[in-house]
Amino acid sequence: AQSVTQLGSHVSVSEGALVLLRCNYSSSVPPYLFWYVQYPNQGLQLLLKYTSAATLVKGINGFEAEFKKSETSFHLTKPSAHMSDAAEYFCAVTPGGSQGNLIFGKGTKLSVKP
Amino acid sequence: GAVVSQHPSWVICKSGTSVKIECRSLDFQATTMFWYRQFPKQSLMLMATSNEGSKATYEQGVEKDKFLINHASLTLSTLTVTSAHPEDSSFYICSARDRSRGSTEAFFGQGTRLTVV
Image (cartoon, rainbow over all chains, first blue to last red; front, top):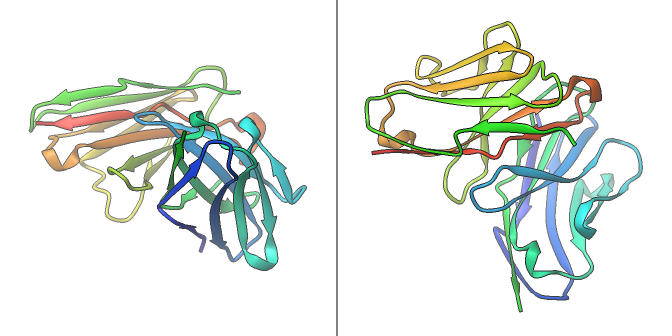
């Protein structure tokens, strides 16, 4: 079975500071991993995904994540936060290569202070 | 990228009435669509998996007679909340897989905010 743990339900950073959102996963098979962003009252937008190719994945809006099998982690980072990055971020996992549904973490709300 | 359109974006209904939510893949064919429910400040919980031309597969604890799912074509799935009650108030989100891109691509609708009064 797959599961996702996001450490920290709320992260607050200053504009221009590093953003680090943590995600650890549990999977009995090689996983595919995703980060999504959700703005208030909207659906989810894919930021980036890992599908067993390069372990360092670059996504949209300057975000990137690194798959570390030894640590079962897939943390999301961005060097410099913008005010527009304030949103809810979800990490998700699905069994690699399957048609299965996504299993989501509980989400991390990112606040960006001016 | 592929676009999934969900309609309506918000709806208010009276207790006891039914509400239909549509999920359309606008520029791709979706053999599989997923319906999620999201409570305030919580994550998305899968309700059911909808496969075109066959019955939906419901997750444990989800009442199939209350949440009717129909996936009659490769571009449309509908979720009908029957005899809605205030506890059904939630944010409902659909997602669809673009079969031409394989299983790694899932695109989400913009969600439907349902309020039952």
